[in-house]
Image (cartoon, rainbow, N blue to C red; front, side, top):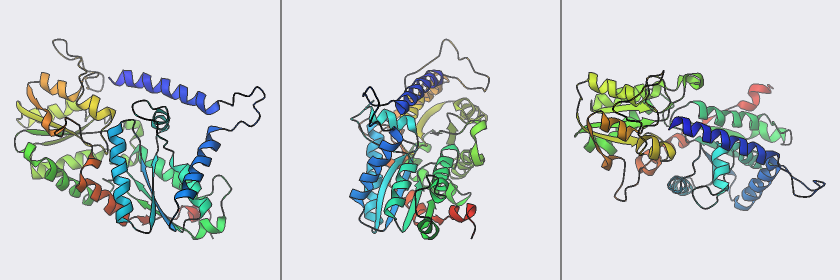
Length: 365
């Protein structure tokens, strides 16, 4: 499963690089415009048309190509607009691959999403007095650094076309990811998760699948949040477990080992994604039909079983899989943003957003 996705990403990246260098169909290329310029023009037009206030909130998610994810994002934006009067609210994707696939209408009708750098540049051009950038990540890991880097580039006028006096005096704030702080954020999410899934944890093993970062990309050592969350959840009910698709020594196989060590050798297993939205990982890696079972599993060098979903792995390991934990009455896998109490945690982070001074950090007075 991972290998197939890896090659698919390579192909998509290659196509993306071609699209970014493509010119117009005119033989002499007169009047051609780069995608970067075109995207900026489109975002500029959107901001100018929608600007009603002097303050803005930018929600930055990794992105997705699933309609269900778009619905969750749209619901979140709608709630933000209601609960943050006086702010204009916008949504950004940090993943170029997700942006290109959304524009190409890969799984749904075509939609235009843009990287945070375009939105921040547009905000600077209309001179919002205050800008809050809210990270929609779960952990402060690799994707979170993209959020921070975009803010730094904006604050330091990386394009060289914004008013330096404006940048020196505007207010720039950062809303932290869901599990930014330990123990406060970890404990808060553990309580919310138990509210949502306690009925399953009382009947069997309740497994939560996060994304995680490979060791080489474990920015801020954020992977530890998964371990801390499992500990906080097990203090509530020992049937909770937290694994990932990318964190070394915390794959589904390691979750299985911990379950065995704790005496959970059979019985019901329930699964749910520990991700802001339910996309490819939730539907395929967790609840998909991929299965490499052939009278036994082959483990890779890191102890993971590839090309096999959590659902099928635990079923082959002797557990009874109950889909009710990760689907609603329509059989839909639900991401974290589809729970009102999780959205409330993100909004609390926005209300407590911290003022950052990336401008003066490089441009001292």
